[in-house]
Length: 235
Image 1 (tube, rainbow, N blue to C red):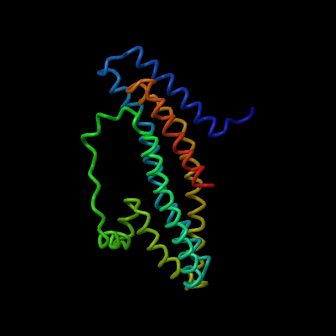
Image 2 (cartoon, rainbow, N blue to C red):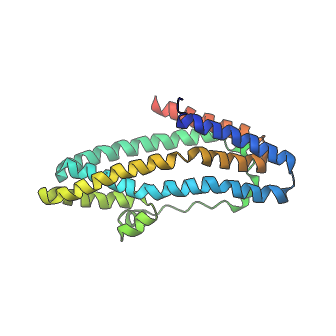
Image 3 (cartoon, rainbow, N blue to C red):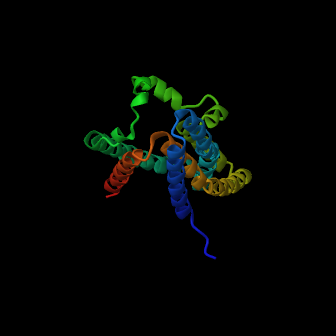
């Protein structure tokens, strides 16, 4: 029997979540019944997101360290790093401009019926260059890994990777260890992704039970804007 691929499983979870959420909302329309049910179903997506956060730091650390250490000398790392930063910065600026244009023209989140949370919107904090630069350079690698702060992790890995590469034969055992760790973390990522259909099922059941089928039009608009923006950026 042919195995159902992950994408198909996610679509099935999405459809089943919509059906169950709509059925529960029709059968027990009282908010006193819907809210506990939605909270319980949302646990599936909450667990999935926590697992995703769990793998980010060790995956980024091991993959970057292995790549940098295998490149070798600081000059080579510097050239690659400079090109990467230029590309990353340029692509980020273009992406931000594109997002602002799409959001202001199409207003994709307007149909999601999120009026109840407008009073709790957090005001944007004024940019502080000094704080930003200090934030990039970590005081403790353990602390920034625990909080999944990617930029400080990258800075530490740059220094550590070059140091490991400079050890030559003595550093080979470290490179081999983190190479094996990166492969193990990719395996863990695969295992976590197998839970995506359950996460989608729980999330859709909760949102449909709470908001009703009408909210689907808002999600369709958001998805259309998202993929349209990605296509434009790609081209």
